[in-house]
Image (cartoon, rainbow, N blue to C red; front, side, top):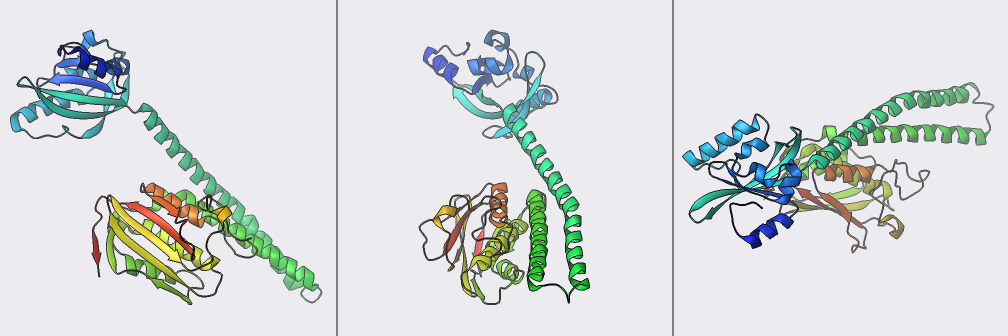
Length: 359
């Protein structure tokens, strides 16, 4: 760090941290510039100390920065001080890159200074772009696969039906059973394609947070699930602030999964929710057979089923869909491995406004 603050110990500490540190006075003039800042911008400390910090920014940030300082001195209103923000920085060679900037104020010997902490986020931004491109590729693949494969599957089913109709009197029972298996396999493949497309597109369907009647939403969701008549659903009368679309996708998949894999034709499903720091803790508990030990580590992966598809129709995408939705909002989903009377899925769902009211 060079050289306005003649404190050797502080200079050593500042030059060893990974983040860049830049100290300016209340006129925007650079007073200190640590080694990480040197690496980030390509300037040596002596090239920037004594000059306005706006030299490290392209337009329009250069003009905006001077206005921020002037407004703060005139009004005392803090716009970027004490918070982080993303801006574009400019290196010595003129190239620009995304940077995360946090600014804090300090007083030293009656003089006001501002300490800027900087971090190059180019790699993170590139990863975000690559992830976005990969998601777009997945969605495109799922759409093409769904569209191009559904037609021949439907054709196979029609051909089988025509053969059954034209030769109904002459077909042996074994052939009729085999034709039934062919049609079931075609239906299964069609459902798998539909679920794959739904999985690929789920992020584009999710909505912003709003006030949701949890009891009403869950009971409406149960009504959409096949073979639901003999299942009792217990849900608290609670109003919460979450994505309605996201919550409905999650509950639809969890409830249908319980009914599909229950060892009896009837059962109990309990939904519970409570506010916590940063969001909500949500759980869905059932009195079914539970999850076998060998599946517990991979139950939320794609194409995982607890039983043979000849026993239970399913694509194995339901819990993977749940995980993707929760991850989209920055939450976590897991199995409660201590619960042994059935199955309990635990969810932490972040919310900036985790309001909670009963009734």
